Length: 360
Image (cartoon, rainbow, N blue to C red; front, side, top):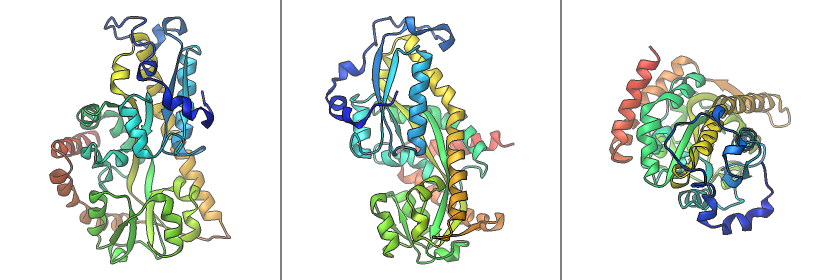
């Protein structure tokens, strides 16, 4: 159930004990219950909080609102989840801290914003690592032991439990000039997040990557402080970056990955019936999450192509062009192995083995 931002003060002042409401009222007898085996009579009435990194109408917010409705329906109205958008409970850094300290119970957060906390999570910044087919890539996110066990455990060391990894769509390039070959990146001022791995990825193309907050990016592109950027199509269109960029390259060089997360102590303390409902809601939202991003990204591309007042030239990389970028991007994996945490090499190598097996 969606609450208004007016509840901000109350949300932040609630105690940790209140956040774990219902943990031991029904007893945790160790049984693995299925959501079909429980009803609203089996769980306490609770009110939880979930925060996202995006705003109303964007992928994470649509997901979170539907996740809240799913919890409400599965629990016969006993579980209410108040959803907050970006900025309503602070910055991305604030949101991660609130989740890890159990001030809020749930969050949709991206590994990119937890890279200093869990450097192994920077795995998802590696370009041309996952399959080109986004559905195949999502299947890997769903099934990979490297991601769902080893990487998940790294987050749990910080009291954050990823319940699901899912994509918000393929990443695409926009630029003030065409970006079709590695040579087009020579000296190109590419905006990136503040991540050594992402910076190294664009340096591999001989670009000049520049870290910049996305809040400053529109003006930065407009004034020529940076010449290009990367994002999923829905975000490019929603942020109006196409208004100040002449070229859009359908590069599919990466995908934007996010996580449905819960505070670890809170989640482990839930009684079996309540946890079964949470788990079932997560499962029901897996396919829906893919549909949401697909709908939004396809719609965004159509609107960008049809915008006659701010025309943008759209170009899709050929497989030969993608292969040139792929060859240059591959050595950056060694940088990840050596610099992104104690278990980075194990996670990446296991994931690559899993992908080879799944795609045979």
